[in-house]
Length: 136
Ligand SMILES: [Ca+2]
Ligand SMILES: [Ca+2]
Ligand SMILES: [Ca+2]
Ligand SMILES: [Ca+2]
Image (tube, rainbow, N blue to C red; front, side, top):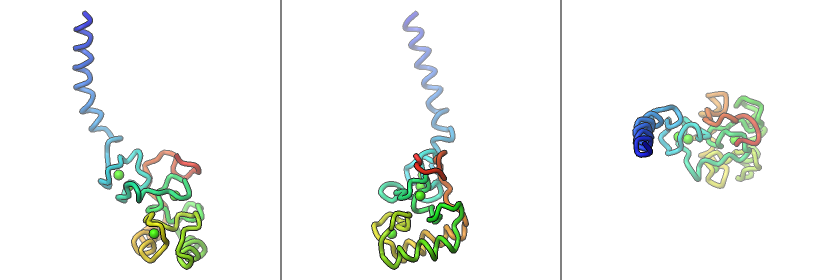
């Protein structure tokens, strides 16, 4: 009887594992090795160490041009937030070092901020708590 129960569990496990692998939580949209459910930028390959989230709001720096956390990425984020950090060359704590490289330079602007600006909003993030501080 005990062997039979174990065999049943083993069969159930063999059935359940592939099902779990096919489910949503195992999806990795940007192919950076971080599953969507844990990825703070699901459409941008930004695995460690490029996955920093300086302002801890659940949007990784790479997809978080909303430096003033107003909910949108607009000209105010650029002129009042990004430009001063760009001129200083360092991140003041708002996440302006968008590629997590240690400096704020033209690459952060052209490769990261500009696409964010045209998108108009931060993200998308796979973290359920994105948009709240502190997340996670
Ligand atoms: Ca990913
Ligand atoms: Ca990502
Ligand atoms: Ca962030
Ligand atoms: Ca940078």
